[in-house]
Length: 175
Image 1 (cartoon, helix red, strand yellow):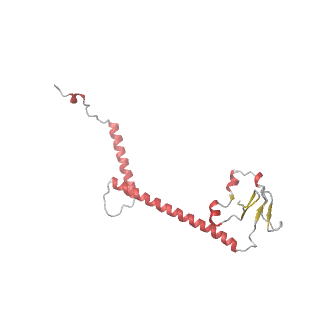
Image 2: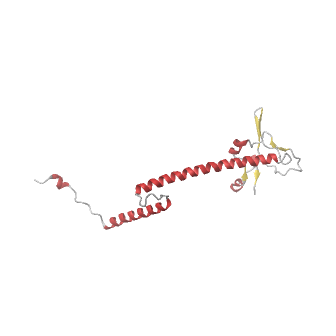
Image 3: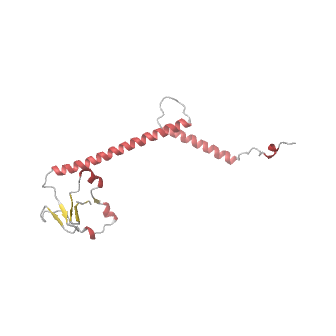
């Protein structure tokens, strides 16, 4: 009596010519990518031949090292920018009170008063509540960022008067 297992087993599947070619193309592409990776990753002189797993692990470690260096550089750049903003404000303060101008608005923001006379004023009075800006104009407005305010108090004055609050902020328009 024939063995039932042998009767139901499938004959080995043969790959078609197209499948063999596709498989060969994938392997060739993988080899090409691994060669490119060897050029990009510092491998060191310890060994002339590298396994695929070893190469991938070194690539992973190298990527982490680059990400950490980028994070440190970004942090240093932010610190330098913060310091630059502080030093610019400090320079403005040290240049003297004759160049400093204090702008105040009343509680509804419609009246502007200044320490200078009207003839000396170079600022343009603008009713901000009724002004609409196009997208291009908004890009040209320079204001103090929140991080600047947090850094070294660049807001000139903030007060409250029986429920009415006022803030003094200087906007500069660039052309």
